[in-house]
Length: 180
Image 1: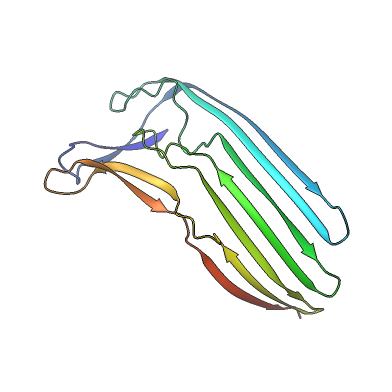
Image 2: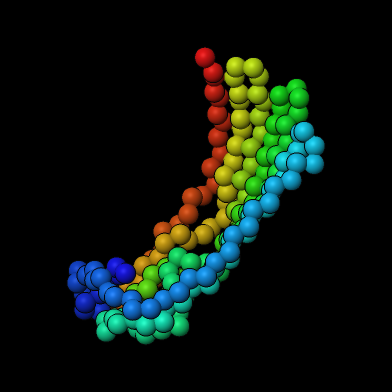
């Protein structure tokens, strides 16, 4: 496993990477996907992912003890559900909701994300050779972190702090496509 660490806590330029051996770990998961077509116009779906991970034997003198801790970027659950409607006249709409449990950002520290939910929507019109779609991702402009780093970077004392990379904010657009 590859991870990073700060060599000297008072010096943000002393950042290094190391590959460490994991003698034993486990990951046990389950995924389920259900789709239901109640009519020719409607499609409903739900997906669920469950995972249980654990480090059991890690030799990493520069890191905290990882034995018994979950792996990084392994939320205990992910789920999504939604549905779509297509009218014979060409109008269509879709709504998707997804959720993700909290997860450790890295093995180099104990900082975690928060769980979050996102909503995506689209509606449009499909003709024989063209389509127009109005769409929105992260419809409610949820703030969420997808990556996190924990190290000292702010003078004068360079205390450790969590720095996160945010997920995409709300995006709204219109897409036109033409088939030839």
